[in-house]
Image (tube, rainbow, N blue to C red; front, side, top):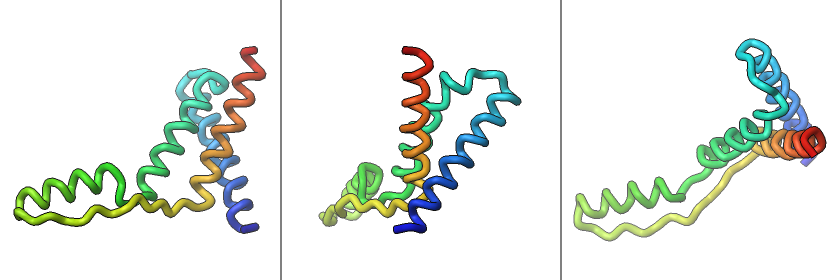
Length: 103
């Protein structure tokens, strides 16, 4: 548990630094875009760390049509770790900062 928390904090810091450096190279407002970048990264990490979701059901459906067999559906399984939790932590912190700055 302590490793996951440590990796989450380290990942959130790394994401923040990478987004900040990119905001200096490509001129965009860090405060305006950091939440949306974190949200997108969290969704992408969740999608790629799961199995048995929507894309798997689509592939199973196409395979069952091609072979005229009925295949059983797999349940959604998610194997997230410290990197995903770090992206979520970054997203939450950037949302709070965005709310404080604009309201």
